[in-house]
Length: 139
Ligand SMILES: [Zn+2]
Ligand SMILES: [Zn+2]
Image 1 (cartoon, rainbow, N blue to C red):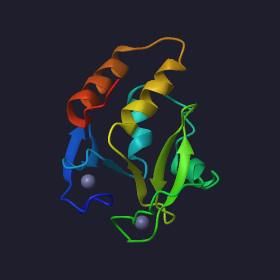
Image 2 (image 1 turned 60 degrees about the vertical axis):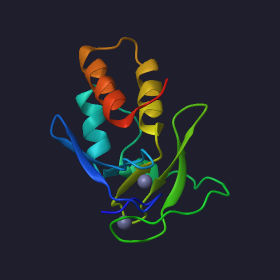
Image 3 (image 1 turned 180 degrees about the vertical axis):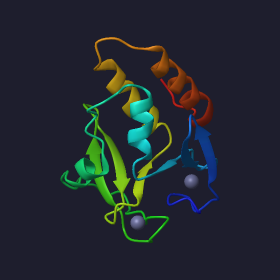
């Protein structure tokens, strides 16, 4: 699979049974539908509002950023804002193949979700360190 942002080759990265496609060149991450939810569930972050259905129900963000194409079906992806201020703009396949995050954005969204929880757990720390190592999520 080629990266929808830089067209470079993507590598598959696995954590706790969840596979994501990662672009070493631009540090972007592709989640097949359902994989982001599994990752969030593994961190005990429920009700994140980030299921594919919920994301596709959001209004399309107004932006000059170039549309990207789904690496699976080649359709133009929708740009939607998720998370709390500052929101993160991600790309979603209108045919529900998955979600694209630019470099560092996955870590940003997950940190926002953790900050909105009353207490953090070991599982969240483990996934965050995985994200830090693999995705180089910045602070
Ligand atoms: Zn890339
Ligand atoms: Zn698609």
